[in-house]
Length: 286
Image 1 (tube, rainbow, N blue to C red):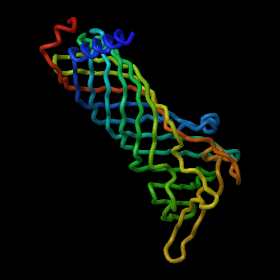
Image 2: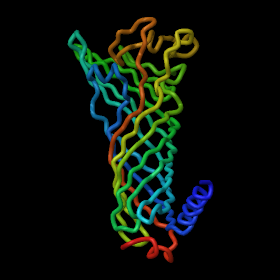
Image 3: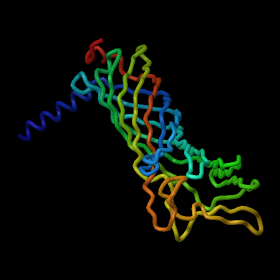
Image 4: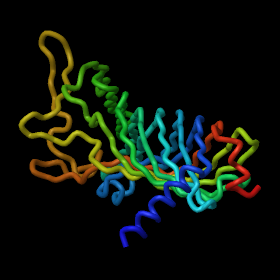
């Protein structure tokens, strides 16, 4: 039995060593619908469609398995935009509009399974994970009151613009979003060989966030907005946890559901192939 397993292992190594090996280097871009997914917020229904784009560099390495199937690993680094638009109303007849915008640098890796790489068109399934480093964010809220009065709270990183009766500028004591965002992603793509050296890829992809991206409320160290100089005006932001963003209920001890980054969209890429031309006809059918 040991000899059988040893023979199978050596045969697999021999097949891999003689199989077509192909590297790819290229660029990618995507258009997708982004969600700051929170169960309570989503159920309330104030979400608006939020379209975002991303772009960056990618590289991959493929080998053939059984002369017909491509198995590869790929990596990406790029700039990603996530966020959510909101619009709703209150019981007094007033309305609000708001948005959150988050910019990340994301690093990801994926495992790829494809049909014959030598074909002009190859189908490819992929799954992977990435981590995003938060570069900047903006959280803006406008309350359109009855009588054309407007309350504005606009937070850009640690800078705050606040307008009620007059303009005020200040700082937020703690970041309102976490510095890291992790997610898994899954998709289906098609690789089109437009020449012996270049590949155009079109794919659909779903990203599922793995952890909380909002900074959780800490009653022992609540986040504050600080306005003014020597005698600053200080107010809590928010005073207590809020079950539904921009609505409430807002009271001590309430639990807000975790908020995660999610997105679904279409991606394109353009890659240069690096491969051994002497082996392609041995293993592949045109």
